[in-house]
Image 1 (cartoon, rainbow, N blue to C red):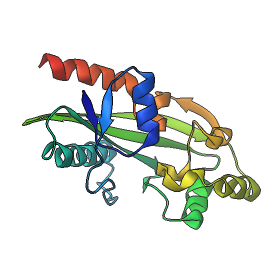
Image 2: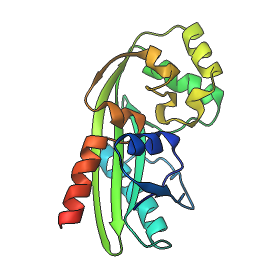
Image 3: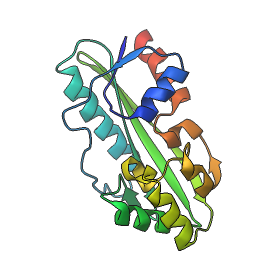
Length: 186
């Protein structure tokens, strides 16, 4: 059985929908500080996912999956907002613009490890302050990278998506299935 090193209910829902049996073990430090890596966003999310997976794998036997998602707009990395004001600031930056969602994944079993990532482009529609305030008032953006949930009320903020939809939720399921197959065959 897969061990999911994440408290994210969205990742859990995606795994269930894919028919993957798992149990949750939350890593001691579920959120790593955001750092700029000179445009190496894929490197950052893969490294963060690997750190989470290894921290759980040290304590648990079995195949551990961890993931980390960030939003990047105009070169600025966005994790989860600190509070409602931070969420409004993030959404205002995304308004009317394209951005990228990066999710890094890591599989760890004993000394073996594999990482990969997915990048998806998302465009927000142009939002008014009233739109932003109404969305932030739902409370939904407070625990989401980039301060929005595409599968929730945040769907109303989106103009279009180019790439993997489940990646924007927080776990690129098609890429994960390919990783699991490759990991088991290696």
